[in-house]
Image (cartoon, rainbow, N blue to C red; front, side, top):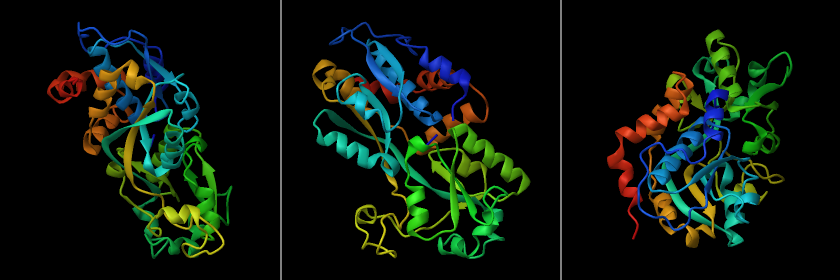
Length: 319
C-alpha cells in the first residue's frame, strides 16, 4: 500500500470538481458532490483521481476528502463520505466486513488489482541470514537485522500505524526477537529502503504490490505459514496454541466500497465505479512516474485518461 509528495497532495486535495477530461453534457441524478476519500499512498491517489476524472466526464461534481484508511468507515456509513477506491484484503478485510454488516455501506467490487503486503528483505541479507526466505531463519539471525537502536533485537520497519497489519502480534505469536518500528509515512518507508539498499545495510520491512519497489530492488518476501482466517481468530490454529496471528498476511483483492445511500442518489455513478478495472502492471507503471520520475499525480492521471479513453468510456455506460 503507499508515499505521496506534498506537491501532489496539494494538487489533489485542493481540486474539487475540476475535470480531467471534457465533462459530458448529459444530466446527472444529483448535482451534490460525490466525496471520494484520499489516504496516504501514491497508488490510491492515482486510482481515486482516475475515477474522479471519469465521473467528472460524466457530469458529476467531485470532491476529494483526506481520510484515514481504516477510520474512514465512520464517515462512509452515515454518508459524510461517499466512495473509497482501495480497501485491501491484506489489511482492511475485517473493517470492510464489519462496515458492510451495518447495511450502511456497499461493496462495489474488485479493482482488478491483486494485493500483496508482507515482510521483505534485500537479497544481500540472505548471506547474513541463511535459511531465508523461510521465516524460521529470522529466529536464528535476528541480530543480523539489528540497528544500534534495537540491538541485539532485529528491526522490522512497518508501515504507518494507520495501515494496521498486525506486525506486533505476529512477532509475539511467532516468538521473533524483533522490534517493530513504524514508518511515519509511505514515502519515509521507501526512502529508508533506498538508503539501506545503496549501503547494503541491514533492512527488513513492509513492502507491497502493486508498487515499483519489488521491481526496482532485488529482494524476497519472507515466507510465513500461509494465512487462513482461523489464524487471526483461533489461538489453536498454527504453531502457537496460545496466540493468534502466527501466520503471514492475507493476499488478495483490492475493493471499492461506498455509502449505501449513494445507490439511489447517483446510480449511474455507482455503476461506473463498479465497472472500474486496472491491473497491477499498469498501476505499478503509473506509481513509478510519480515516485521515481517526480511527475505530479494530476499530470500522470491526465495522461492516462487521454490515452485510454477506449478503456474507461465503457465504464460510463449506464443501464
